[in-house]
Length: 505
Image 1 (spheres, rainbow, N blue to C red):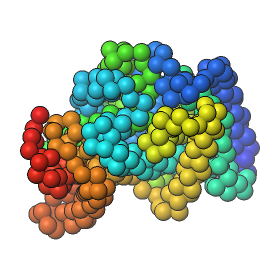
Image 2 (image 1 turned 180 degrees about the horizontal axis):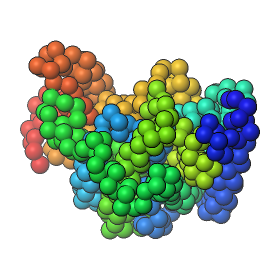
Image 3 (image 1 turned 30 degrees about the horizontal axis):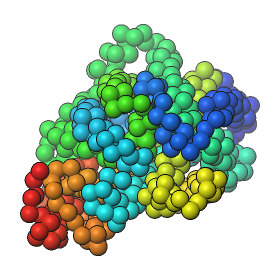
Image 4 (image 1 turned 135 degrees about the horizontal axis):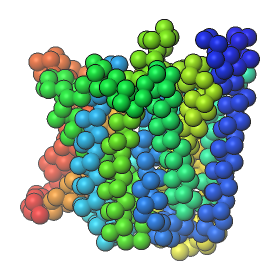
């Protein structure tokens, strides 16, 4: 960082955020977050940690899901990728709506009927404990990798614009962020997160809306002018009708629905919050409300991307090599102090929202599906609570090392990385739940982990050679559907004849 930047003056002579000012804003935000966490979690017990005593207000859960779903990936990666993919991401957003409708009408009633805390208890009821542990294991792997990718993105921004100039290693930056999350999630769990997520969603949404307003003002555009600029931009094209392309509409739309189904409906992280609502009806209201709200919110993010590239072009700002650095570079070094404060608040919200609840839900899944704590009558309540805290802390350490691994691995745009990981790790979950819901087939325990590992391996090979083997066809996120289908077929074929006699319910 040069002398001008250390003094808080950007290349264009405008005031910018200094590292200490960024830390002050983030610190004030964290102070507010801890106050909310203390107030909501001060009387939390085990029921409050795992399901918020089933007293969560549906509209609070719905608003909180905005930040958890969008996170730092949408906040930073989506605007940056507009140059390459245009508004193609919106095809998936449309599919998300269908996915949330399926969750509300199919999965939510079943979860409440079975009175589940860990949703993988359904696999235990249907196929036995091996299937339950296999499903939970894939969730643990999927969520850990996804949370690490999201948190890596946000931590990387803080490292580049704050801690790097201070000589602080990336490892220490991530460790501090995770310790801060531990400070307010260890006790209150879901009872706390329902409220802190809503608080963070507010700042995340404000971050993108105010960023659009500020950059529009800098470009001399009113509301109508911004709409026109976005509409007329070559980047605003939505639909892709080339069936061989990874961005083909039906691939994106159906994959969006499938991704929502698995990354929300078959994912302990999101379902645990929805299951904290008092009744299935209120949980459905939560999901339908969130599905409708996220459509305009994602449009704001895509429009912001067009405006960011327009600003960079008009002001002669060099486009960063990594598209993920476009928004932070302009916000922190070119758009002035107001834009920088808005960006930092939004990014801080995204940083904590994207990973804090994951620690709680990973802990829940491991405690229920692997340790069976709810059935351990030989342990006192204090012993169970002690083990739960150690598991919570243990996952935070694993998260730290996975993020450090991402740092060493490369610079792929993180939104691509998250969806690519989901295609491989969530596919077996999709296949297991689909088989359990749609058929009467029962599967011997020993075959479940074998098939669930083999399916992603086959899909990986196909994704690497599809262009050569399939006449130029390239797999996109529809690989998730194929992965789930292979899991289902494999389990049916390996089931005993008597167990697959009634294939369809």
